[in-house]
Length: 291
Image (cartoon, rainbow, N blue to C red; front, side, top):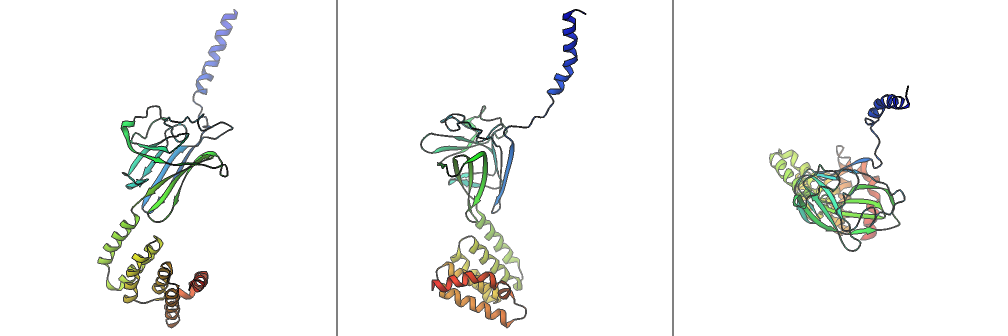
């Protein structure tokens, strides 16, 4: 067979192999990742691809300054918020957004939430579709290096938290505000109005405990006082003790804690303080020192 014919036959044999190679699902060098966190009532979901430093120069090189960056790799990074939020003090409606950054060598970076979330990288980015732009400080520290890009969320209290982007020496924080307290207290008021009298003490106690956790001890005090007036117990007196201590009244806190102990000892049905006292000792010791 002529050489030309042999070559053609060999090519025909290889052709199906070439087609099958196109069907291989190769793993990505920058794997996909999902970060999910619930801040109060607000679910935050971040979908991104996580590139590695891999010995490369990142800032001003792989990621140019003064250009829109996908804040990840492959498809545009997306952020989903299940409720309306505020980002760096600016309102952002519930929904899913493409998240971009404009890095700068000096000064604040620009964070962008774009309504066209299903796009590849920033190559078809349209600023007319921006839902929000905010300025944010980029911090660099060689004490905290990360080879792969990652996102996380940290809660500060019931209504506030931070979205963090980390890669190489970069740490960038976006402040997120939600209206957890407002929603929770609205639900509480509705439940209190509908509750029978014997349930109101427990509901008022729950409201006081929630507001204490939310960092609002002064707002919590009327609810714990209502709970005590309706049905005194070692539990509501203990919450009162914690509220007084949070306001700096350690003498009053110790007196309320003692009342909680007495109520526990005087009732076979009330064992809250006895069961919990080992966990309370550190707080009690601190209050004694703070008098």
